[in-house]
View (tube, rainbow, N blue to C red):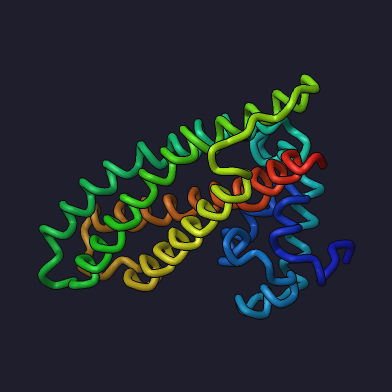
Length: 241
C-alpha cells in the first residue's frame, strides 16, 4: 500500500483530486470531519481499510473528469474562487427553490402519514437560510479580499488591509457555519432514515430524497474545497508563505 494509513482523510482528499468522490460514496467524512487518520475513518465507517486504499489507488491510476483532476493546490486562487462560485454556489441557488417546492408537494400528500417529512422541512428551511447568507458573505466580503490579496502579492504590492483584520477571522466564521451545515445534513439523513423511500412513497417522494442526496454530495465537495484548500492557502498567502 502506497497510501499512508496515518494520513488524514482531509490530507488525502487535498493531495489526490477525485478522492473525495470515493469518500463520498463510502460515507467517509472528508470535509468537516476530515481530521481523522484514514485507518481510523475506515474503522468508524465499518469499511475495510484495504478496500478504500485499493479504490484510491485505482482512481489515482485511472482517468477522471477534468474538474476532479484539477490540482487546486497549485491553481490560482482566483480560479478556485470562480469555480466554487460558478459550480457550487450556482448549484445551491438552483436547487434550493426546487427542493422547497418538492418538499411542500410531498408534505402535502404524505405529511399526515409520514411525520418525518415535517421534521425534514424544518431542518431544510434552517439550512436554506444559513446557506443563502453564507454565500453572500463569501461572495461580497471574503472572496474579493482573497482575490485582491493574490493580485497584490503577484504584483509585488502591499496587501490590502481588510476591515476584519486578517483573513483568519472570516475564515473561522465560515468554517463554523460549514460545521453547522454539516450537522444539518446529518440531521436530514437521520430524519429520512438515510433517504430510504417508504413503500407508499410516490414518484415525487423518490425524487425528493434523490435530490436531497445529490444536494448533500455537492455541499460536501463545496465545503471540502473551501475548508481544506482555499482557506488554508489564503491564510498562508496573507502570512507571506
